[in-house]
Image 1 (tube, rainbow, N blue to C red):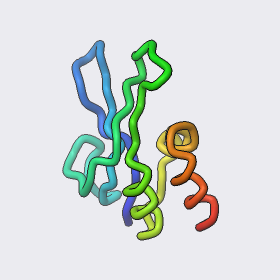
Image 2: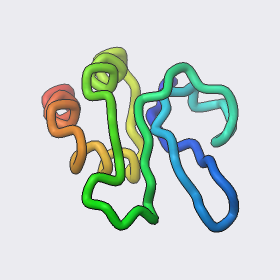
Image 3: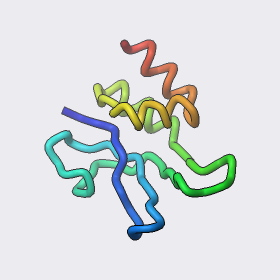
Length: 89
């Protein structure tokens, strides 16, 4: 089963996350199929994430399931991909 979820990066006090498409059986920080974007939670800027909407739509159409936190990030930063997700459901 394919999942789109966060992959933790960075050091203890400066976490960053990558949004990745992966097999659900692989560990959180393990091997992934494709990097779909990044998220910097501690950044004070308005634009603290960047997502590849085209590839997100592709993986959603292939049957990938988003985790709850990934879904909220996609809803905020990639409305086109979120629309594809809602149409599929």
